[in-house]
Length: 263
Image (tube, rainbow, N blue to C red; front, side, top):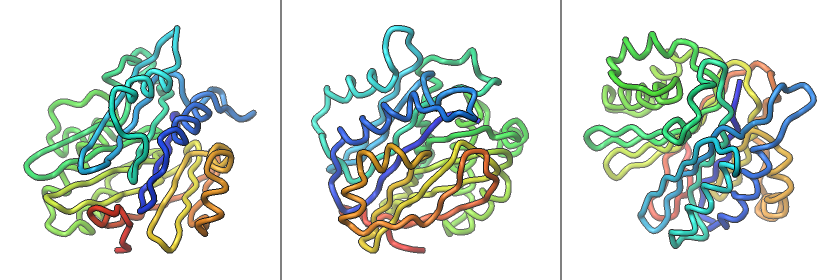
């Protein structure tokens, strides 16, 4: 089990500085019953603002935190707030301890025809080799890349998004937490899932159509607690470290506002 994630979608413009602070804490966060922190081997982010998408990544560095490197890169761009954000801190699983460069950092992206997938992943997709063969995925860097490309394949196969996600959830195995930005033509969705036992997940939602999710509650409470309380967020899903549980949900994203619409 590895990595940590943070995400947001909604009508409110949130400061990117808040996500920097959360990711900085996630990167070194380690509970007493954990053998390693959540990050340190890479970091990355994806955001959408003013119709523009931005992905930034950084690999492991002995001299500098990957999160710090990512947000230094962000200074070259103009946005300081966003309505959609996916953030990831990477701790490589034992299968990939020699793959710590930027190309292995999340988010991963897959595109074909009018479909675009951007994903972040915590855990290990245990049947990634089987899925790579089944869905004829010729090139994949690691299991997380396979996870992203399988989702692309099933969405291309099905006209209805719910049928694609149903197939997707049925074929993935192992301990996984993942979040995906899905774009098909002008339509957008957010997909969030948890299978098996991972390093935790908590999901906050409110009636405005906003969502915040993270691998851990502590940094969210510390840096977004006042905002969550003021805007009447409630926890809609929570699972602890190494606790077994299955969860999947997806929402259509309203263009422009990034408000989540229930399916």
